[in-house]
Image (cartoon, rainbow, N blue to C red; front, side):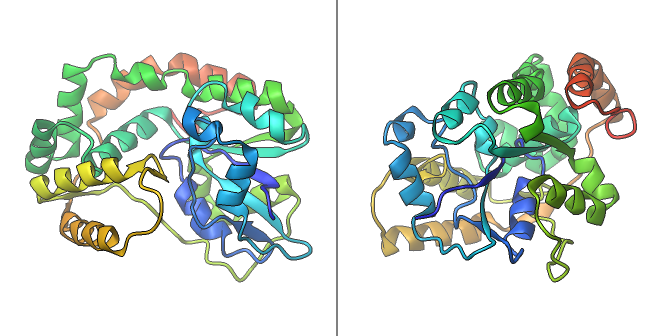
Length: 299
């Protein structure tokens, strides 16, 4: 039975899906078939024990000599206390990589992604289809002016917790902006942190899970969202076992739901500047933790 050697904790909408799709090509890296799991943040799943987790996600993996097993999972930063839980079962020397991006852009991207999954109210979804992401985001902030608070110290609090549990030398921070600027240098830094060799045969130019389109059939989108919520709790199926019938229903709904139109990607400049002021303290905290200047990366 395999178990993770390294973790890429990432953060939501910071490129972990792209990392997963790139790194699974690497000859020395083995990843689980399911990218995300809620084990360390979900009380019900965590109660099943570490053996269940390793059997469920890594039990069927074949690891050859020289290969490492890597979990790439943004859900490792989904709640406080996750690092403490991981520390109970994985040694102090376990290496954990975090990937971050401008928190304002992360917030906006997460808003768009939530819309695409049908998890926003129906009137917000309809408004977005008609007027676009940017205007819908402004409307959302007018109605929920403190929505950003959920993300205000999310990066720094998670990083401080993991550094406390695993040691600063085993926690490394990278930035999505650096990947976009020089993709080869980004992956070389990643390999160096994990002590891996470069693999010249993999395709680095992968862009996964982009949020630049919106389904046009709103009713079908909401139907798909309700079906998905009923069948799944996060990435963990509530309904035990396999069902070809349910799979066909979900496949049909997804085909209809996926008929989408490309929409505006950038939030209004005025909104972006306003939110940057709200996140100035978080930016300074990240600079202290990472010892990196972020002016040329964020704002």
